[in-house]
Length: 620
Image (tube, rainbow, N blue to C red):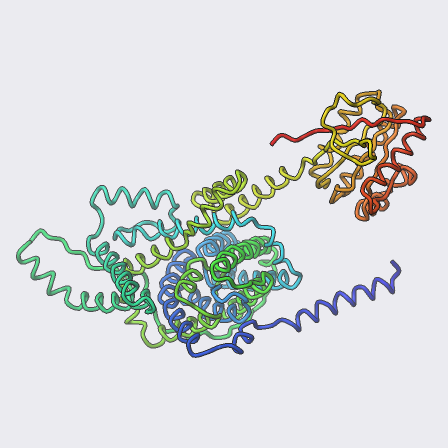
């Protein structure tokens, strides 16, 4: 390619990228064409319910990252709103998550002091970098790679997240304290130990069970009402009344029972009181330190970006399977990138796809992306006007709600399909689930995808070598009795299946076993049903050809399709074997093999040749 052609190709690529950027659309705008008051009511209820979960979770993530709660809540407000503008999914919710919070905390702790950059500024820079990487990945269709993620991986990961969510809230439901960041197994063990030892709080457990009862009553008698919103609101009112009358109740009971210990309910405000905030555009303040920091945290930003893509794929595909909505993977990736860029510009921490809040959004009946936008607005309104009221919701009540959400994330129908379909699906599901429960969440995704790909390659790495011969009518047919082979000088090998790099060596090795029989002087590879040849296959075939030539024998190839012929020609193998020894496929599937037989008789200097067929049936 000369210089002008290279310049024109570069300009064409730049023009295509520019056109794609200009065509970036806001899927929510299309929803407005069919939007109605009924859908708005559903979105408003879902947004309000989502708000009740988002704020306390943000406080928890702030504790994990050791950063002010306000910067995490800004990520919920700004990131959630901007992400919803770009998402194609009606239920996808962006915001801080446990996995991203843990990675961010580790990154900040490792580099903040060494680089001389305050922790918050480093977290904001990380959010901006992640956003740029994700937007770029979405623009080059990197999100399409999610098509190759096994559904067994997604189902197992969703199941693991649901179980982790349940386990992480047991201590709040039972009313005892634990250190942040405990593992799934340790959370279960401590919950059982506290239950056996009687170290639980009867008041916390009672509040949680009462919350579940309210949910059930509302769902049972008024199924169209938002039971989560009603239940948590009622528990907030009851808790406010309890705290108002608690001194009098405690004094009265203590008068009759001097040794009685009554512990007050733990409320949201006890986990870190919220105060009113207003997000402000801060921009990025680049100094010499920031440029050095980019070099140090860039690989981490790439890892978080990939993790976010996989989490988004798992969430949106799982919800789409239940809602029937069509999802655009690249659009979701661009939405997350735009949200993270906005978080960076507003001085907030990075975020990703939230399993818990997306599930709450779906279960609350959201009908469009507006539910997430409304939730962002409502979060801001709550913090500005009703923060004191919100602070009175019992932590145990919220824990009961999240446990209920976690249980609903267990899709037993899909789990049953994964566990009954094939052994490979069982292996992928089990390994991914165990890794999610006992290892890091990003490790679980990588392990699940790796195992699924490895098992897929194992399945497709053994081509089928099937036995045929020409019958009296001149048609290819299966050879049922090997004893009928009369002339052993020619061997026809019918090849069927994928011959990519994973299968090339296996295929040639099987043929080489037959080639050890020096009576066979001509091998005919019938490759009409061979697919996906690559460089590995070409080199393996060249090695087979050289081996046969060295022993005075010949290799012929028949039934060559256009794709196979292209690989043979581009690799130079066609010239090595000789065009006179390669026979293209024709309309009649036996013609090319008959032409190869004619060529074989020429090479053997005989006018009559019986056919020996090599057959290797793979074990099932």
